[in-house]
Image: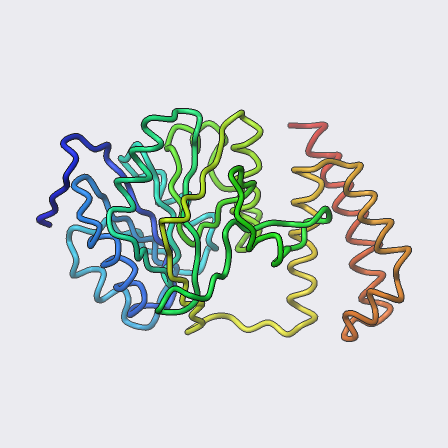
Length: 299
């Protein structure tokens, strides 16, 4: 790769992309990184068992470090695999359906982080259209119960609490310090959990609005879940995130909120039967609390 840059010395930066049946979009994502002309860029792709021709293309690119999984191990585990073989001082996490659209963005973000050692993560803002006019997210924000808050996520902030792994850059040292991604999160909530643990170490996060990312929100080859299955899955992760990062008190207040407003929740989610409701918000909530108590006792 013949890459040039206006800066004379640049730290090695490793881009870790997780791919599963997105061959065409993966190529666009990688090309958007190469178009940055960053001179010290390492590309790592972790393939989670693709069957769409992705592996044939990846095997032909001998400059890409490739990890081949025989099955989908999830986003968190795959990113940890890629990070373990990365040689960069900085690690880029990028979804395979994203594109970095701002010229010189890598150099700009890394130069800032080099000059500000307490900043452990940096990102841009995310759009959903080719013209980059439809803003999806400034920083993914959650409400007090750990649910995604779309209104707050659109608001500019100088102190983001979460960086999206759609595209973000982290100090390798900081990632090692917190132990990388929690692999309990197969997908969803893993970026929020990572960001919270980095902030608790005293680091800061940055969002630069001049750095623009296109998120295609592609869905080829994805596993389909019905509403009820997805509800079970996301509530399990939300409860785990809540008690792990924000504590037992917040978890119990959220639990009581679910019990108190039973009728409102059943109206909001009509596919939940009484048994589903009791299973999720009574039995599984108690199991989550028990699991956390055992974890704290024996860690």
